[in-house]
Amino acid sequence: MENLEEVNKKINAQNEGSEMLPPNNTSEAIQPHSEEIGSNSTDSAQVSHKCGGAFHLGHHICYMVLMLLMLVSIVVLFILHFTQKPQTLQLPEGETKSGVILTVNNDSIVAHFELVNILKSDLEKESDRYTKEMSGKYNAFQEKVNNYQINVQNQILTQTQMQNTEAALMKEKESIEALQERYATILANKERSVQKEIQDSIINATKRVNDTKYKADFVFATAEGSMIVTSNPTLDITNEVIEELNSAYQKSQQ
Image (tube, rainbow, N blue to C red; front, side, top):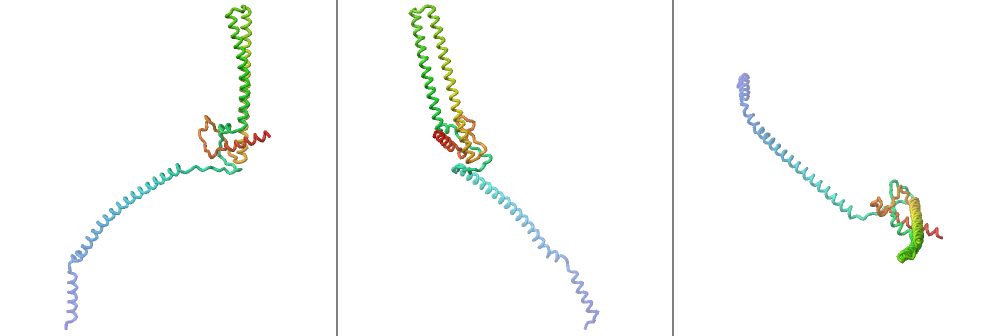
């Protein structure tokens, strides 16, 4: 039986033997793991690069899709703009519409206003009467001139008679021209009076329609050759003004 001292020696010898094991075993055991880690790092970089490229490609595709959708939207709006039928704007009666501009067409009003035709007819009749009167006076004067020339050619008149006849003809000619100028002035004044009466009637009727129904800030008159080139037909109240004009005129004749 071994004594205690020999047992301790064996234990110490075994411990010293375990400490003498080369450390390369541990290093070799760890080395493959390190290489695996390096390989994994390389693979991770490649995956990251591929993911980055995929991200940029996806971003580019999304941008192209967005631009395509915007283009389609613009085309749709363009088609709707030119195919939709214009809607008539209904202005609430009695409600003030700040900034709204209504229009009336003077050409249409003049063509359909009963008073215009009556005043125009009266003016034409008066003009015809003056024209006939002046035509008769000119014909009579021209006949006197022709007779005087015949007498002069036939040497019927004396020198004194010729002078007196020429003075009388000149005086009659000036009288006819003065009368013609007078009639022209009368007709011009009459025409201005008719135009003013028509204009005042249109303005008053337009005010009544606007004050009663719309209360718009402005009402512009349009006509051929006017400064207003175009206007919104939904804001035109010409027909209502014509109806108001003819109604007021018919009442005045009762």
